[in-house]
Length: 249
Length: 104
Ligand SMILES: [Zn+2]
Image (cartoon, rainbow over all chains, first blue to last red; front, top):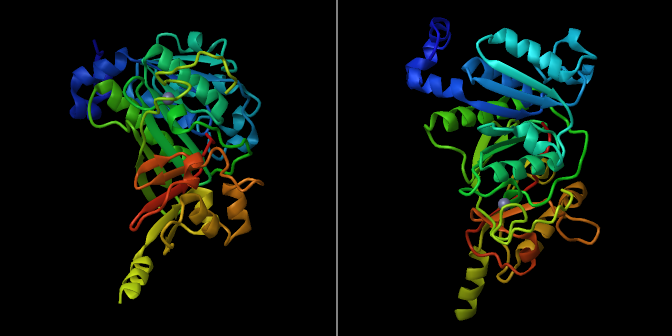
């Protein structure tokens, strides 16, 4: 049941999806991997939307160079754990939700435990090896993975529904090389909003998801488009010939 | 006459190649080319990419094969880069070449 305060807090969106929809959000648990450029705006908007339980995982400490985009971390937070900084802001902006923060590195030994009984995984990582682990966890638990990534003013997003859509490995069998990527805050802000919108629609069971659709955004030209993607039957992560070798991603 | 018609056919083959993200910055975003019949996908992209050394090196490795993360689409359908050496392009094809981005 929603409290009187919650009814007021969410009044304007209850107009959109009703108290029933708001209750659904309240009962939901979302796992957010990363409290960086994508993770900050995503967790912020999912918090104010009233997702009942948010779990945010990150291993890093706030640095000066993060501040152009990681909007949950303030100048005064430099040196603080990102999980601590993010947790404080999220609890302050919405005391009616539960925020769990976990300061750790996601790896293949802990990913399933960390994701726990979440209803969905938000990919707010900055590297493909960890994304592949999240992808495997999503397949294992049969929960969606909301993928997003950025570079410069470019971005991409898609929603992976295990068993229904191609997985991250089907779409991106090989990781692009690691680099110190250029980025301006508006790019993860924009792509993060696409991901957060997907989370809300999925939980509410409304609208049309970015399922088997890879959304590509070119901020420099303000041009968005989508590419159809499909499941790869030979995919090493979700294919029917699924190999259970624990090959390093 | 017949010879002329054939020539005409070849001249009218138009293919659009679209480069995304960094590839587009280096090579241009939408490129219309008129390849001769029998041209394969990899050959076509190589030829265009040679206009810019950095663009070429972003897409191809030292052995002139596609870097493994490069994604190729032909008319909205994925083409494995391994198959690009045998896939012939056809009139009106739209080819997309893009790098996944990885930042967060
Ligand atoms: Zn797959």
